Every structure is written in structure tokens, then in C-alpha cells.
Image 1 (tube, rainbow, N blue to C red):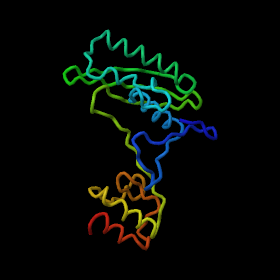
Image 2 (spheres, helix red, strand yellow; image 1 turned 135 degrees about the horizontal axis):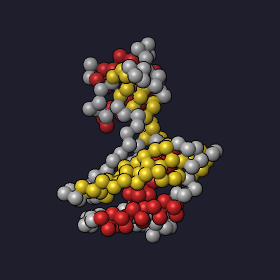
Image 3 (cartoon, rainbow, N blue to C red; image 1 turned 45 degrees about the vertical axis):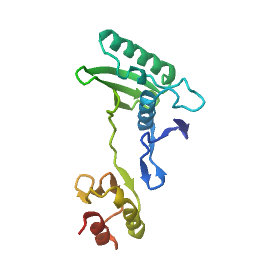
Image 4 (cartoon, one colour; image 1 turned 30 degrees about the vertical axis):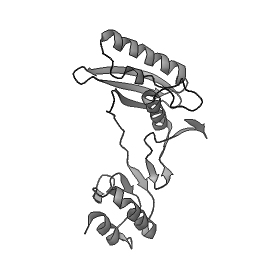
Length: 199
């Protein structure tokens, strides 16, 4: 995470793209959330030139959970926040929801950005293969032939989704994309509709 032009900015933890070949970026409170999620779900050795960094929750995978262990994890998390994020965020609430039967620990963190006061929350899980991912639409600013080419390139990896008009957003939505400039007057509208919805 970097501070550029007084904005926090970060690239999507899961490698999502804003448009093909262009990394999805987050700013301010969302950038903080993305960086915090990376930090909490990382493993030792994930950070170049700092092999001891990260992995704060990874070491608790497959460990027996009891009240003492949960208390220890909570203390360690609060200490980590103080060491690495104290000038960026303040923790408002930290809740643990253990699922002893499935050996999953859900951790819900509510925090605010010290600089702007904006609040957010993050949910992470301590277990081997369960994850919570924040879903956000990606805006596509193309129109006309450029939009048509974008759809041609993207359809193979998004073939199960349909193009629908979102009456709340007042935009055409093709999950996970918002086609910002698509209208029925677009010269490629019928071709885009046919390509996506198979009509």
C-alpha cells in the first residue's frame, strides 16, 4: 500500500482486473481493507526481502480452538494492528465467531481510517480453504466498437452471466461489470446483446 497524492491506493489482492490487462485498484478505505486482508491472510515468506513478515493467522490453521487460544489470537491481532497499522486505522470492534464443528474461526474487524474517519469492516477466516471476498462491480468505460471488442475478449471467461439492465444503477450490468456507456443507441448494442445473451 502506498500513499500517492494524499490517497491510499492498492492493487486488488485477488488479481482482479478493471479491464483486460489493467489491474483493479482500490483507494482510501477500500485500499486499507485490501492491504489489511492481505496482511492477515498471508503466510510467512510471502513478502520479498522480509521473510519473517505476515502469517499472523496462518500459524493457527488446524489448531484446536478454546477460550484461551482465542484470547491469545485476539491479543496478537491487536498488537499487530498497533505495530503496523496504528497511523492508518483504528480498531472499533474485533469479534470472533468460532465454528468448532467445522474448525473454522470467523474474525470480524470493524475499523475506521484515522485520516478521513471513514469506517469499514473486514471478515477473514482461519481455515485452509474458506475465504470471504468482497464483491464489487468493475466499471467498463468503453463504448461502440471498443466495448464490442472488450465483450468479445471477455465472453469466454464470463459466459454464464447475462447482460441485464439495472434499474437501480440505470446502467447495463454484465456481472461483474457495469457497462458505463452502453445504451440502446450504441451502434453495436444488438451485437453486444447477442454475443452475451446468445440471442
